[in-house]
Image 1: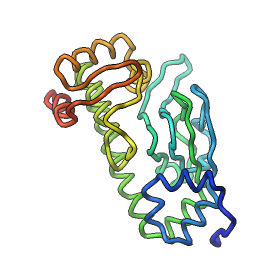
Image 2: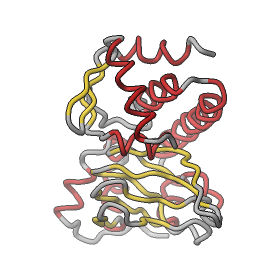
Image 3: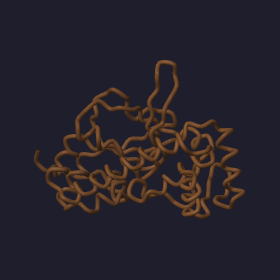
Image 4: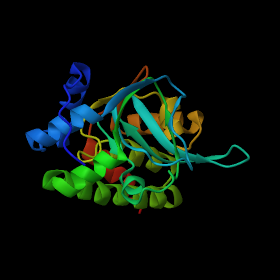
Length: 235
């Protein structure tokens, strides 16, 4: 594959400039990415990518919030992860060029960036900074999934909610996360697999402990380290 030298779309250039890994690339590789990625808007509930479909792109969330989940024939679901703005995902399926193993669904209106699989492999082969970023992503993602299984099996509801909120502050996976999370209780329930009522009770308890403060469709984390410790002490 040769490096693309097409003129970049200004909107795409502005979007990519917000993502740290892009700035680590050599100028020629940045230009190639800008010529190849596409930016697409999704309404809440829309599917960005389907389970069991060919993996055609590496996906980044520029704005909004998406979840990675599977559904069985009865309609039951299992959520693997929530990905807020700033997060990129799907490296494993892109690397192996396999069928995608989960549905990707927008929990709210979201803008997503798609880098075609061939261009992902091109950067992996020709850019050491990009290769390093992908390795760090895979390492953090593995830790996240191991923790998710552990938390679901060992933590109380309050602990699961505390862990899910703490997870959104991983600087490698989710660099855009701010102290005030624009996150509704319904969205948090969809991320954790818990009912809205159980999430509400757990959040009220965490607020009582002065770990966070609640407002309409907003959760302000007051002490991130204590919030993480609250979940970990049950293990």
